[in-house]
Amino acid sequence: MAWSTPWAPTSAELRACVECGLCLPHCPTFRLTGDETASPRGRLNAMSAVASGAVPLGAAVAEVLEFCLQCRACEAACPSLVPFGRAMEGARAESAAALSRSRLRRRIAGRWIARRGAVRVATALAAVGQRLGAGHWMPGRLRRGLRGMRRLPLRPRSVLGTTHEPAGPPLGTVGLLAGCVMDPWFGGVHRALIAVLTAAGYRVVVPEGQTCCGALATHEGEAAAAERMAVVNRAAFAGVDLVVVDAAGCSAHLVGHGIGVPVEDAVVIVARLLDEGRLPRVPPTGTRVAVQDPCHHRHAQRIVSAPRTIAAAAGYTPLDLDPDAMCCGAAGLYSVAQPEASGRLGRAKADQAAALDVDLVVSANPGCEIQLRSHLAAGIRVAHPVEVYAAAVGLI
Ligand code: SF4
Ligand code: SF4
Image 1: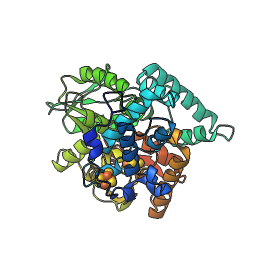
Image 2: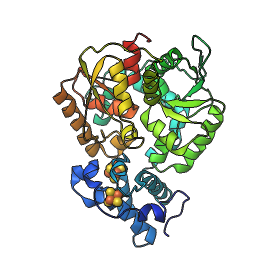
Image 3: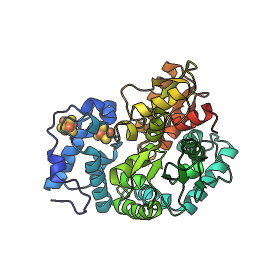
Image 4: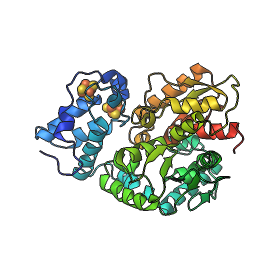
């Protein structure tokens, strides 16, 4: 074997592929290019060639690996149950260990994102950038990124270190993952979720000692950094009954990798509480909303009905933004690493929203929200389904 780290793709993972090609039509990068090396089968073949020693792990293989969105649409479509996401995480870890490329992205994902001071500085710079106006003097990628972000407060209100009690005896104690950028950039989502969970009868705690979930680090091949983050989160959430996560990428990572206590995505628990009659509903208004399925919901966790249940409980008529469930092109730092492919996928979502003629899209992942908002036509709002619900029933 030519691999060198404990995260490497295993022979069993690679052998599971029978090369049937049924995943190819579901792969966004294959659909963009028609190129076998941009397909799941081609990527698994590249990993097998490295594993057997037939091909060195050099720049050519790294390019094949890095063009993958890690959206896992192939995994959901594969009849042989190839664990593509796990194998690709392992291959990225190998590539990061063997090659010195993508150092800045790896440093951001593996170190800076978990440092609150660094996130605070980035947030302050972005807030100032928004106030200066995203003018044409800015580089195009930065301008688009700022356009996609919510209006950032100069002094973000953090929910870290807070505890929220329900009106009566608590049904249980839920720990909220504050996340790396969710807390300063999407604090409104946290506040909406806390309001909904306490209204349903849960005590919500947001432990101060937690850190980033590690998803971005794992995406960029920084598996050791992700494991260090998991150790911190295990300690921070010890003693809660359930960890709830309101960002699809983070919930997929924590559900897949585990932190010692049960983990559930926010849309799943809110939809269940609605089904159990613990939360109110508003009557249908006939207003249409497009539901965008983050890949980390639809493909990684097979979550499909929950956001639609929540949108319907908020009085909306939910429509599929993309019945083919293609990735929007956000995919961690993909829009930075592969701006051309990411832009094409983002523009496809904008066309789909325009065709549906909606003025609201719900998405339960911060990266998808930024990507959608930077491509959608002006006037189309993007929000988390739990935020939309909490506002509709008067909880926020
Ligand atoms: S990954 Fe699965 S669907 Fe794709 S070629 Fe291999 S066996 Fe077939
Ligand atoms: S994870 Fe997504 S982009 Fe990568 S091979 Fe699978 S379907 Fe294609």
